[in-house]
Length: 195
Image 1 (cartoon, rainbow, N blue to C red):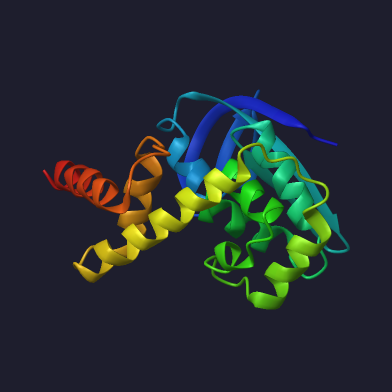
Image 2: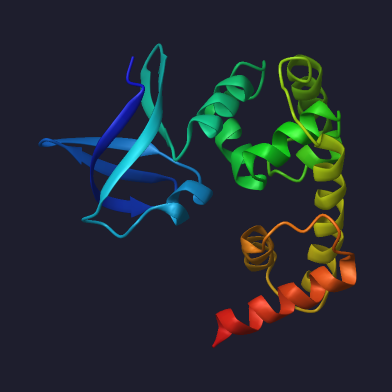
């Protein structure tokens, strides 16, 4: 029904934003990854949207790109997932990495999302692995495994998990980098952020 919105960002809070489109304020539910990518309030934004309508609920979900919207709609179509869980899954990794994990049937990479247990991850893989095309999926899941290992090392060093995930997500993907190199890069980035 409403595929996209373009307007002025009025406010951005955890889990939701308000966009003014010619005098009409739309409340959109977003994940943290989307919220962090938005400009400051007052700037113009353009978002892809999904209109969710069930009996007594009418909600609008916002996404920075069409790929995130498509993956959200696929996840939401899985029995037992729902829009809030689908949004949480999109926070765990980039859409490309999530599609690679589903394509490679790596349920262990999906269960790091809060609220997604082993059975739900298995259902996601079962229902979506044949609907997803993920070039270089094996290389992506190998890089995810490496970053997971690096995340645990940095958390054990005392850094907060969310902060570590944010830093690792911002580092350029380097397929040939080993764990030690990735740890050094992450430590440099963490040091810059604390200045």
